[in-house]
Length: 247
Ligand code: SAH
Image (cartoon, rainbow, N blue to C red; front, top):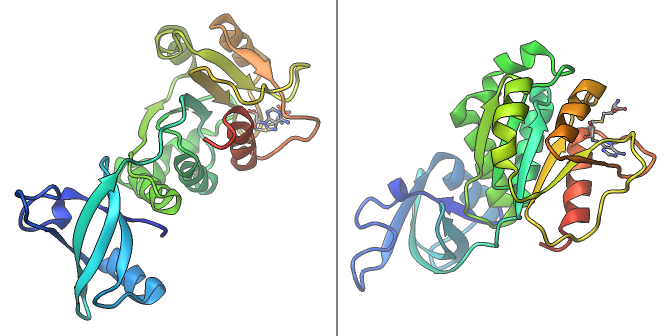
């Protein structure tokens, strides 16, 4: 946890921006308290890096610590890192990989993500309890805390490939550079592109030719990452590091 992510509900008195002149005071219990106590081992007088969900980043001065909670005096003064200029279209990975992929995508700066169906996505994956909104959010929080970011990604689920690609995707991807990561193509993935981008990544078994054709009809260009086939959770960081190095 490189950043303690605070939410408006953590500020029992005034809001995080507080009344003029009044320091904003946040009280944390349970997971964040335990982490601060056991990993940071922070005591009264120490400062921690904090950020307000969808808000600014700053410091939290520990003003009180008990066995169950910690109280921070919070001052926020800088913006989170800019989002990647990207909409990610990801075929739903199996549950275990989904958790990690959402965390990594969030830590890498993805702010717009569509989890979609594809022929090689097993139907049972859509029943996963990890797809519940609260559970996806938990993974995003872990990614934001890791990356020192505060902007919560927006995740949408689309259980039908064809209507999504034909009816919705053209508008979602309008005006952006459209790429589909696909090992079977001669075009290498471009490096350091300035454009707003829509990137599609396939399921573990890959997109089937029909799906690649539909994406191509929607203006998507197939790009590869070299001769090695990577797992989705590896392909994603490699793609993002290549498209948007250092961003
Ligand atoms: N058996 C599948 C591989 C799927 S890998 C096939 O041969 O198509 C899962 C997804 O990760 C792919 O759909 C693609 O989006 C991405 N990926 C993995 N390795 C890649 C590579 N070398 N080039 C481009 N995309 C890759």
